[in-house]
Length: 343
Ligand SMILES: *[C@@H]1O[C@H](CO)[C@@H](O)[C@H](O)[C@H]1NC(C)=O
Ligand SMILES: *[C@@H]1O[C@H](CO)[C@@H](O)[C@H](O)[C@H]1NC(C)=O
Ligand SMILES: *[C@@H]1O[C@H](CO)[C@@H](O)[C@H](O)[C@H]1NC(C)=O
Ligand SMILES: *[C@@H]1O[C@H](CO)[C@@H](O)[C@H](O)[C@H]1NC(C)=O
Ligand SMILES: *[C@@H]1O[C@H](CO)[C@@H](O)[C@H](O)[C@H]1NC(C)=O
View 1 (cartoon, rainbow, N blue to C red):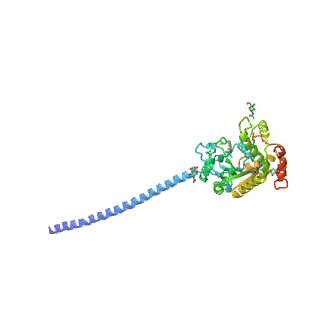
View 2 (spheres, helix red, strand yellow):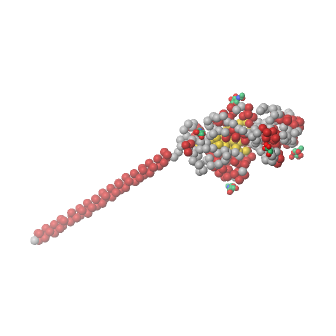
View 3 (cartoon, rainbow, N blue to C red):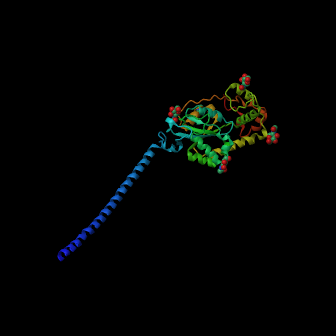
C-alpha cells in the first residue's frame, strides 16, 4: 500500500514531469507562434510596402509627359502646362516653349506680334505689363508670368490646346530694366527664350513716337486714337500730321534709346535669345523663318493685316527737316537721314 501509495506518490510525482513538459511545450508553441506571427507580419508588411511602391511606380508611369522629338540639350526649354482654365486635350503631351518679345515702343512689335499670332501654334499675348499693378514688384511680375506660361492668361491671342509657344510683348520701360536681375533669373530657370526686336533707324522711331503721342490727344481718326491701323486710308490720315522735332533734344534722345538697348542686351545676354531688327524683317522675310526655327514651331507663312503709317522719304514726314538734317549731319547718327528701305 505504502508502495502503492508510494507508487501513487511516485506516480503523482512522475505525473508532474509531463506537466512540466506541457509547460515547456506550451512555451515552445508560444515562442513558435510568436516567431510565426512575426514572420507573417513581416511578410505582410513587405507585401504592403511592395504594393505601395508598385502603386508609386504606376503613378510615376502615368503622370509625366516625355519630351519626345526634343533635343536633350533643349529639354529645359520645354514644359507641359496643365492650365486651370481648360484641358489641353489631345495636345496635353505636346511640349510648350515660353518666349518674351523684348522691345521698345514704335519698333514694329505690334506688327510683328500680329504676324506671330497668325501662326496656329503661337500665342503672343500683347503688352501684359502695360497694366501697372502687374509690374508693381517682382512678386506680381512672377505671378503674372507663371499664369501666362501656364496658358491661364486668357487674351484674344490665346490659342487652342495645341499652343506650342506662348509669350508676351514686353517693353523695356515696363518694369523690365528695373527688375532685370530677377527677371533674367526667372527666364533662365524656366527656360524662357527672348526675342529682341529693335529698330535700327531710331530717327524714324522718334517720328512715329511723336506722331503717336500727338494722336493720343488729336484723335485724327473720327475721334478715336489708334496706334496701329488696318487700311491705307487710315494710314494716310495719320501720316498727314508732321511733327516738329526739338533739335536740342534730338541727339540726347537718340543716345538715350541706344544706351537702353545696349544695356538690355547686356542684362539678358546669358538667356537664350535672338536679335531681330524691324528693318531687316521688312527687307528679308526669311527672318520670319529664323524666328520660327528659334521657337521650334512648324514653319508657316505668316501674315498681318496691319498697314504701315509712315511711308516714303523721311524729309516729307518732319516739319523742320532742314534743322534735323543739320543737327545730325556729321554725327554718328547721320545714317538715320538716309532712306533705308522701300515699301
Ligand atoms: C499645331 O496646331 C495644330 C492645330 O491645332 C495641331 O494639329 C498640331 O499638332 C500643333 N503642332 C504642335 C507642334 O503642337
Ligand atoms: C507687391 O505688390 C502687391 C500689389 O501692389 C502687394 O500686394 C504686395 O504686398 C507687394 N509685395 C511685395 C513683396 O512688395
Ligand atoms: C469716319 O466717319 C465717316 C462717316 O461716319 C466714314 O465715312 C469714314 O470712313 C470714317 N473714317 C475713318 C478713318 O474711320
Ligand atoms: C526743346 O527742349 C528744351 C528742353 O526741354 C526746351 O528748353 C526748348 O524750349 C525746346 N525747344 C523747342 C523749339 O521747343
Ligand atoms: C535673308 O536672311 C537670311 C538669314 O536670316 C540670310 O541667310 C540671307 O542671306 C538674307 N537675304 C538677303 C537678300 O539679305
